[in-house]
Image 1 (tube, rainbow, N blue to C red):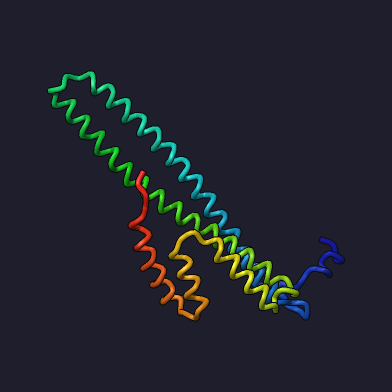
Image 2 (cartoon, rainbow, N blue to C red):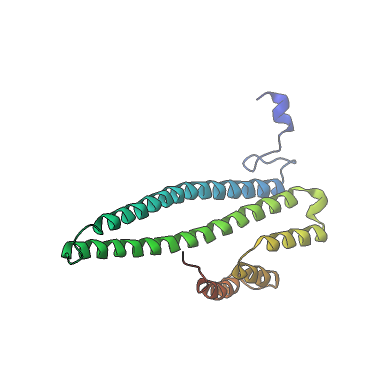
Length: 186
């Protein structure tokens, strides 16, 4: 990097000068958090895709085994054992599929978090908007509008009303328990 380019670079926290800004440092840390969460989500998505493909193949294999089992004599103990094991495996896979639904919920939350942090970083980085209450209100409205789960909306409202993190989490978990009862099995 040439001297002219260094001259126009903002000063970093480890070498502050009169140009150093805690706002710039905050934005950099927000951007880092967004990038780390996005990376983790991508890694998780790849793993879940692999698992989903494996479960699909296993279900197909179970169907094949059950079809072949139908050719065995109806009174066969081997046939009964095979069908029992196929049923047990299918039930275990159903439990795993429900866990995938919770992963999807986690992924949604992390997606909302990355969007929210990026929007917050944009607002903090903008001198015109940083001290504008309407800009902050719009940010909060936009963030809340992205939530699809009632537990997240309840936590958001509680925090904005001044609840502590612990109180908001308790409220969210209570609401989340109600939502768990509504999980659709497929």
